[in-house]
Length: 213
Image (cartoon, rainbow, N blue to C red; front, side, top):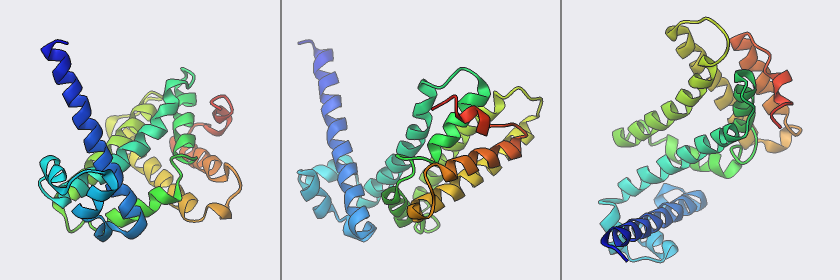
């Protein structure tokens, strides 16, 4: 084995341990809120020592922020995953992304509970607020890129405003879908999202959705 291979293996092992700590923190927060995710509890659940956690994260707050970032990035990635197999047309790709954002696994009551556990701290923790800003923009940038690909002639300011508005619609419907899943029939909110986003943009996304499933 070469030195380069040993280093690669070490980095992989460190990343796996770090991800296990983040996963343990998210499980504990889901069960009892952020207060339940103590260093000792995270260590026990992850099967590591508290000292090892402090090796990766200087303070519990650093691990908490990493956990929130992982949660938010995971949801964006789940929405964007459909783009790997979506048709090439810009309308179809946007429709696939919007619909995926309003269906499982992105729509997940447990994920909403986790999000709620973090969000009330965003105003009090500037670093957590920065994580929120970065992950929010990460999703919105993907959405804006898909909107920009539509065959229309609009300026940058309009594209930005449209992305903000469409993101707001998707966020609101996501919250409803997660909070009261039993109140809606299958794909009802995805169809509402497609119709609403399409109305904002002046395009028909609902008819395209059938080609993306």
